[in-house]
Length: 231
Image 1 (tube, rainbow, N blue to C red):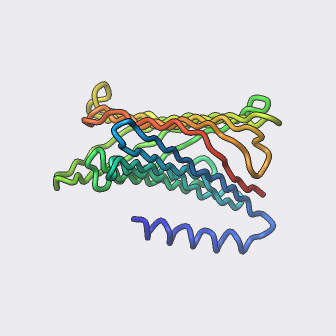
Image 2: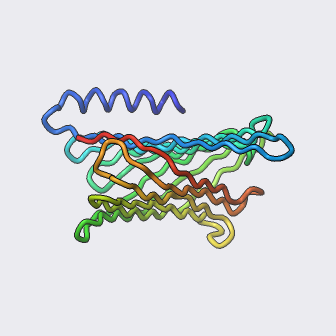
């Protein structure tokens, strides 16, 4: 799956960079970390990466969002990757969501979907709302697997001021068969100081909630330095 995403990204990049007069790109990545030592001499190290990168040509857009976190307490206790790849033309989009989670015993989880989005602005606030139908297949480390069809509703809000910026993106994904008991909620909220600079400071909150998992909520609150590049 990773190689497939890499090939798509390479082909799309080659096509886009050959059209220099209309290319649009945005690179928004940050790395955070923390270290704690308890009285019993246990060392805890947390490292996280979040990236939101895109390339666009006219109405065609490729977007990749990655959220990776790893924690050590003598040995690895948490190791999770959530990666979303989105190919969009005008308001219609195709996407793949890939998850690998040690703490949830997920070997790999792939969701494929098609949807429609609507974007609008209120003064300096950009808002995006979308709906998609997706097919999800999950392979667990105990060699079992599960297939399910889901709805996917997403809301994204972004504001960039001179001194402070704010963005939030939330997904709600209930299954078609049991919307009240089987659903996924994941998203992020981010506050940025000096958002128009290439290097800025961020406070970010990431959540990943699966109602049917033994470990329902994964929550990661971080403060770090961010580097972004836009044309």
